[in-house]
Amino acid sequence: VLIEDDYESENRLHGDPLPTLKSLDRSDRVIYVGSLSKSIAPGLRLGYVVGPAELITELRGIRRLNLRHPTVYMQRAFALFLSLGHHDALLRRLSAAYRHRAQLLIDALREHLPEVQATPVSGGASCWVRGPDWLDAAELARAAVELGVLIEPGSVFFNEDTPPTNYFRLGFSSIDDAQVAPGIALLAQALRALAPPQKT
Image (cartoon, rainbow, N blue to C red):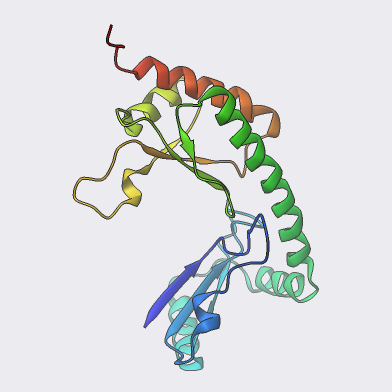
């Protein structure tokens, strides 16, 4: 059995969404878990599961014992929201906004931090960045937060005993467009303050 926790695949910035593993599953071995929290309301904690009927029945019983939130009314309201196509329309608007914001971020990185390499953003709401080899992204995160900029060190995303330390992730889903370039300029300031002295 494979559990597919798919919380961002609908958020493609270019082209059609990639097929889910569940859509390719011919043996009914993939349990698909999705969320409405990213696109609608992060505090809502409303999601869904696609799997065999017996599993869904079992999960509903467990949920009743462990979780009373959200209310049935809220669940029905969002079921109606989905069935009327409003969620698809919302995703299209979010995709356009994220595509614009991702481009602002890439442009700001090119202008203020040419010494880093940003992976082109094809979907989701974050950008993966490779810093100079000497960089400790955890140290950069501590310095950046002092300037009001949040980054996520990338080492936690590697499954290695000694992961590289020079990768970090920049989220852009909730940042105002006007804050992107000034934020990257501050991040550049923090990064350069950590740089080892140049050899003469």
